[in-house]
Image (cartoon, rainbow, N blue to C red):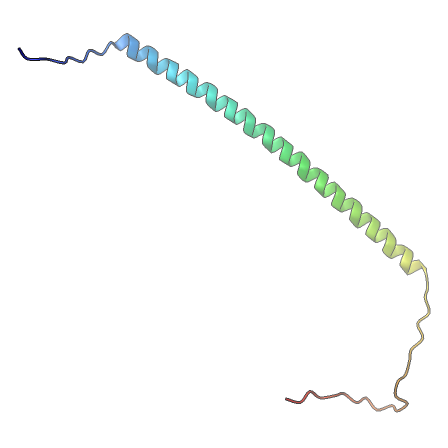
Length: 93
């Protein structure tokens, strides 16, 4: 007696399995896409807030610079040597 193993493929069940697989893959893809879009939106808002903080810091820096320019601080030049010669030290090896 020989044992035979016949594989019977039902086309209706194969088509149904294929359709269910495509549907499940579509749903998983949509969920992943929605998750990625929300992450991108979150990162964009984070970048915008970071740029806003940078601009505020630059604005404060410019205001401080303008305040310092308004104040005139007299600078008195100090002469260490009384001579008018401009002597430069040369580096020796």
